[in-house]
Length: 148
Image (cartoon, rainbow, N blue to C red; front, side, top):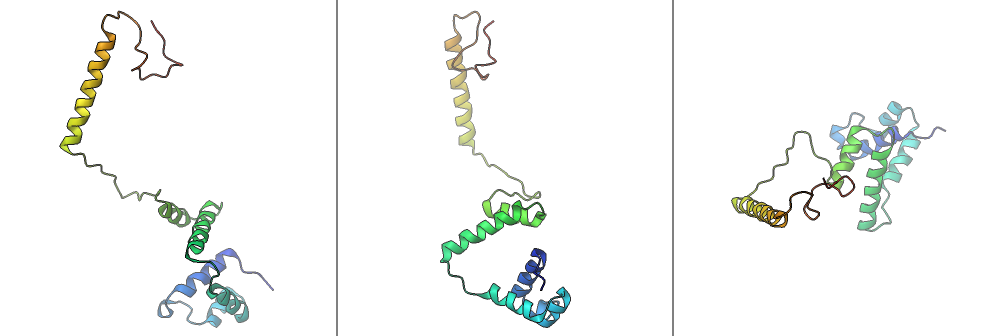
């Protein structure tokens, strides 16, 4: 007896959830013939897929998320597997989407005032200094900063 391959199992899972009128293979017998398995093997597999789950709703969600992750991390994962996982985690952005940040006039004014305040503070600290770098307001990391 041959065991179902992962690809064939996925095909059966999709067949089960596809409405009967949209299925290419209308019966389990036709599906079994197409895949090259006995009708009993296909019937048993479908029964196991339809068994009620012992887990509560949260457990089912956790298991589903774990399955998405496992499918996406396999070396043989398809782009769709990775996309589905990414979308479920909120980390996938469609190439066609654009992120647009709308900034109000108040936010722009506040940013400009803050920048002006920082410049005034820097000038005050630098008054009377003829050389060197201001320690507190430098943008460079301490490791690469040098006093001249």
